[in-house]
Image 1 (spheres, rainbow, N blue to C red):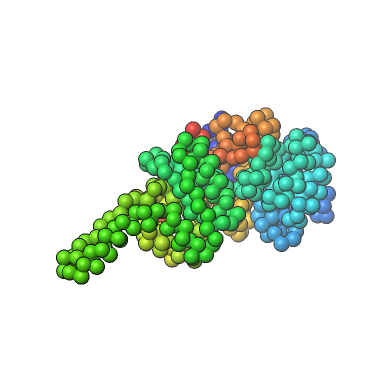
Image 2: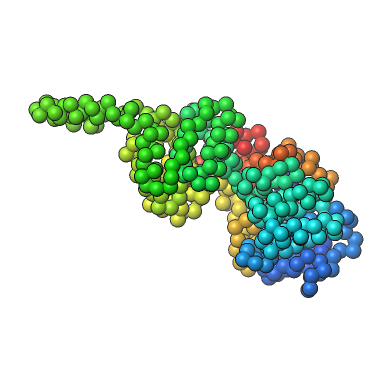
Length: 425
């Protein structure tokens, strides 16, 4: 079943890349410009299919107006791309305006029209507004937010979450014999999310409780936290005391002894894997404290967020050897190529989520429909960003690739797993 799902998604991309004009069930050929009409019934929109059975329609909730209209248009394009081949279920695109109120209104209208599956909305606030409406109607929601708090039975956030990233890195670190995890994180919502992810990952894998420290996002806060977390005073202090005592002898022998002590290595820190969450200038500043406090890459595996995949986020940082987990860009490239060939512009961020959500809906529509049991198939689905598997509680497990920072471009050291049984998923 997993292989069949993969083949269907791959053939969808192949059709789009060849410039096919397979009709949409909502009426007419796939748009050749990046313009998607609103839901059937809106001015200029195609008529709804008169033969579409109730409950088979996929409804995309996207901000086609307002500040996020460009993003919403890309989501709509990607969903149409996934449903371009004959036999696909109808696609009903509805504008949320980018607000919770607009999302609730759009969802209510779609439910009245008999939709069977929601893909979107975009934000956590919109998702929270749609969730109770969909739950009462028994209609699943594949939202595009990466806020794990949005997860609940029947609502699956498709955005790549801190939990998915950290689980992948913890699993890989454990495979290399790492067992003592720690974190130095900013006292921000993102830092808190990364901390929760590390706590969950280590608890689920049977490791000792991670030592998590928060700091106010200032240079002095970073320095003090790393010093305390690494037990720098306890590790370096005795050697430094002996060095000062040798210098105080005011003899050649004392000076030689002090010089030798300066070169003496210290004990490793009380952890062998360290999670960070900074980017930009603060990450560059933080990286200077790691060697200063004797946190050596030979002894400690540094790990960080998928944001490090963007060069600007790690500019100036000395983190050679550090890891992050993210989708394999080569796999994503096939989707980007097909999207660009069809619409004349590259896809915006998160368009891949809309493609995957619509393609999953297409697979299920041709099988047993959109029931939660069908979405939660044990083998998962092969998506644009790798393997993803839906859990009954609303969480999504992902098979992310593992990357290592180098002096040049990051290198992928482990591809994304292709089975949900793999460690770190």
